[in-house]
Image (cartoon, rainbow, N blue to C red):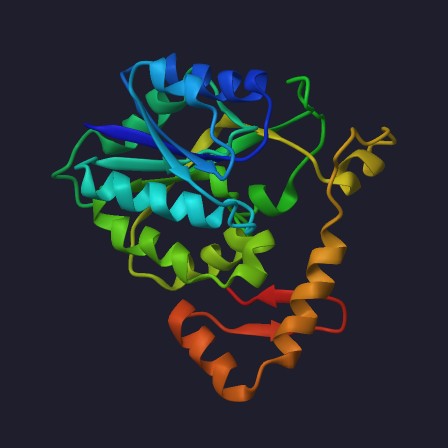
Amino acid sequence: MKIAVITPYFKEGRDVLQRCMESVRTQCIPVDQILVADGHPQNWVESHHRITHVVLPKNAGDFGDTPRCLGFLLGLRSGYDILQFLDVDNILMPDHFEVVLEHFRDVANADFPDVVVSRRHMLRPDGSVLPIGIPEDDERRHIDTNCYVFYRTAFELGLRWSLIPKQLAFMDDRVFYGMLVTANVKIAFNQRKTVGYTCLWESAYRRLGEEPPPNCRNIEGHRAEALAWWRALDRHTRRIIERQLGVPIFETPNTTEVSS
């Protein structure tokens, strides 16, 4: 099968980009990588084998959604059988596609999946494992962006990621999960954790009593902004957005959530 991993990047250091690329390059089978520069290209990547490099002249400012979607469209038009998202500060474990491809061995099987969902380790920026549980992942109430692996029968669904409004980009995977559970697709779930997710959420470190690393994010500010945006929309515009996404977006006193 022809496989590509789609990676948007912004101003990350060369070491971060190289670590991500190396994790793709060293998989059990040859895997291509589509790198999409979000306004700040690092042209040295073009000398590497199995790399397609796309450059946006200006940063989209939407948590990588625009470059991610452009990379997905390019992968679709390039004839790949399998596409996966992988943010530049994250990695694939060495056995990732070995595990994923077990689900894609028998095309004639009635249970052949459209989407494979991987599990993830939480990592500190230095690559060490952050010993913290993720109950909502374990209970399948959430799927991180980097854990979606699409077979070509689900490419139409993957394209719908582009419909997520920019104001909801900070929680795009949560919006998309709502879209996924209402879609008529077959999903296979990995049991092994084969994605390494670099955790930059301040709350996770506070829960462990650790000092958060520099450049951590606090999601509450983004939630407040999204809630203010949603409340300011007229009813007609809200209906259009919810119809396009296929899931209801609703308000609670403290946050904006997606129903699933």
